[in-house]
Length: 253
Image 1 (cartoon, helix red, strand yellow):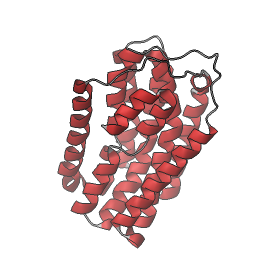
Image 2 (cartoon, rainbow, N blue to C red):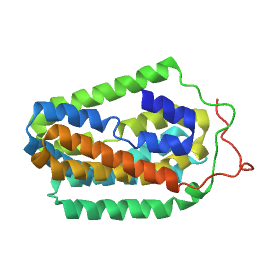
Image 3 (cartoon, rainbow, N blue to C red):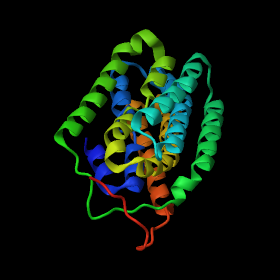
Image 4 (cartoon, rainbow, N blue to C red):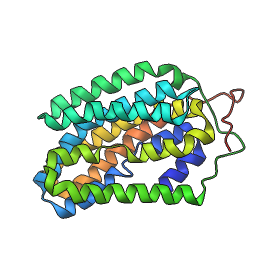
């Protein structure tokens, strides 16, 4: 809830980087580590890393369609794109190298395809989109149900498919549903295009978890994965170009 509020108040750049952090999948992996051994967590993290490519396509489709379109005609095709990648990913066998190659291909193509939206700088206006109590309740409920479902099906699905399910972008989806009508497709297109760069870092966090959990144990590996995600997002923030005072702000309500 705190992450979603900060994302809404601080505008597209900060918002994209905050919702790119593991604020929903992170808790899912914490509880997964409590329920299963390190072999299970390692397998889930590897397939989650491969399935992270599906989120890259999800964001690319959303970013390219958001401007000038309503939520349904934007989010619907983006979700179908996620399924189109996630389903075959769940049926394949992956190594760290092949999963990295898939992510690099999808996120590289997405960054190129959405570069125009990133260049269109939008800064905060004096009026910000204040989160409503019902929005906070919806976000908290969505993430809680998501974590519960991942844990409930994990034993039946096994580590590979559990990792794919845990990679579903529930935080991004709830953010898009709530904010698309409130701040407009143009601002949301930029948020999604910046998130493409940020969510690649979430994939690197899953790769870190896969590579370290058996050697370091679940607690240390989860901390290392979170640290990788935070450092990556901080690097993106440092590299983000500063807007000019003459550039227009986002009109929010």
